[in-house]
Length: 594
Image (cartoon, rainbow, N blue to C red; front, side):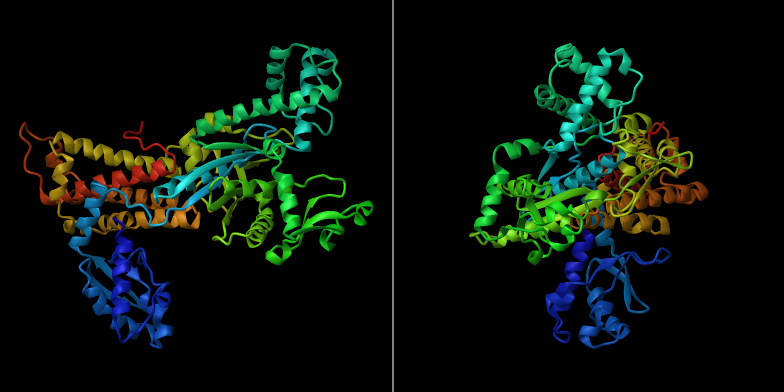
């Protein structure tokens, strides 16, 4: 049950039915229901009077007085009160609490959306020139959790990895592998570092050993023209095998891996260039001013194939093909995004690293241009870009410097071995994606409240511990249907109830805004509320979930007091909700913590 949406829908219906207000649905879009301040005795609050005051030409407090009867007639609302400068606070009625807990204890089958979206989410897409590192890991977790959240809303999701296996970087990879391969046969090279311009990372040593096992010394005396392509393919396949294994260990799955080189080979880029010229969206011209300022003098007078993206929102027009015939990265990437749409997606989501954030605007403009230039005027496809800022790896209070090109970085496999999948995944969600994230290796393995994933998992384990004790008293889940949640009156109990009520809305907003950190924050808040409730019982025996006299029952357990049954219903609801949230994060929900 999405209690918050139910409350908001009822409030909007009552407001729109009020003839004195004479408001339209568009004017009420900003009306919301949110938690009140932390120390408030109320469960929720609405900003309706504040957001509608200007439209109604009425002071917020006076409008709040007018709206108060509308809330009082809602069967889900009990007590109400107006707070400066115009908020209306309220508590949930016994009916609302009972339906909320019942929906959490026995989840209903989720209603599919009226118009499910077909969304392609592309993430990770690291160049196959080496192992995945901690920077790629953030994008992997963000993309996977977003896919989980959107699937939960009933949308059709395709998880996709774009393999950038075309271009000069792959030739450099092949040359780097060949040097490591030679190193295995030539003693004079074994103490040397790779020449400048090659990838220096040790990860290519294992690849070279695999190549020697397969081909022995076949490529030692061959000309580069003969070994460049085969070694490029070998290095790519070896790297991608490792990448797939690491992603599987992280709990990330993909529906498809799309090869850039295969896309080029099947003529997708050539067809795109022809189409854009036919539609008048691309023409041969000299470089635009901003690009000309950065180009070599010998290139200024040359005519390149340039796409007119500026009139569709880009900061400048973009080169698709240089005067020498070289296809640009932008052209290939545009062809790839159009290929996604041709395969059935009507919405695209890209998870970019911090160094690719500037690429988003030109892609969005180019897709708009292609749609406007098409003969079929269907709904324009959307491209949303989530930019993941850098991850700073912290050890002993110091930031570790990482460079994939320099060969100095902590790869994903080593990170998982040190701190485990659950810690890696959850900690990657503890900051907004557009903010840098500090990943402290010691915090990640610490078993204390300082470690967010331990704190959340411990809350779930505590719920399971209470429920095991309840089962020893022969209490079953079916018994919880008789619970009276209106007996839950302490501040800690109401706080936990409020967190449970807000959870469904949080998962929806996290999916719609493409902000998975909201889910991690909600889990953290719920865990904090659960631990606070638990600690309250340690200080005051009357507030214990299971009274002491029930902990050591006789052969025939005594009747369970109504308050205890209500608290057990709250515990079980919290356990199930925490499990749902942790599973959406791809994190295990342990029943015990050792």
